[in-house]
Length: 255
Image (cartoon, rainbow, N blue to C red):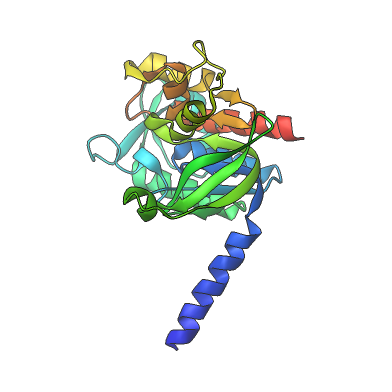
């Protein structure tokens, strides 16, 4: 019985890994914008794999605010909550509250149900860079990255890559640092995230969602981190709308 269990897991995992060595879209970071983007891209018939460094996808959405597991979403993003069958209630004006655990679970469920493959406990340490274009990602295990072990990676080829790594915007920073290139920002560099301003951040999160270099897109807080936008706190409408926008941009480009 022990051998059957181990063989089933090993065979199944490596089949999944081999099937995703080449994808249409590789999403780095399993926060709300990445999960929403993955769902809409898969709904359009694209082959999508999402890579999350931690054990569980969901980013900062799980914890709500200060571990009060409630979050706020504004009226403009309710259509996304409806599509994911997420329950919410009116709070005041155009703002609604929802349970963060329920919401995060729903995003993960519907993304995988739509055909997205999620690889957790994985870390992206670089991109594949060919002909002045991002063509894939460089993949390793999260513990290898965390312990700074000298273990060579594997490679996943992709027609488009999304940097959804949140405040750190790791992929954009790595690309800029290693290749002496200019990004699609006001300075040509990663500008860094500004301090909290909720209204401004909700607006600029969506505005800054774009292709910042051929083959590389940003979504969610990585969008503001790259383009010098503000931090928003535990309001998630901009994150959801950013995921929808980046999916539409990529689908239009790849068609």
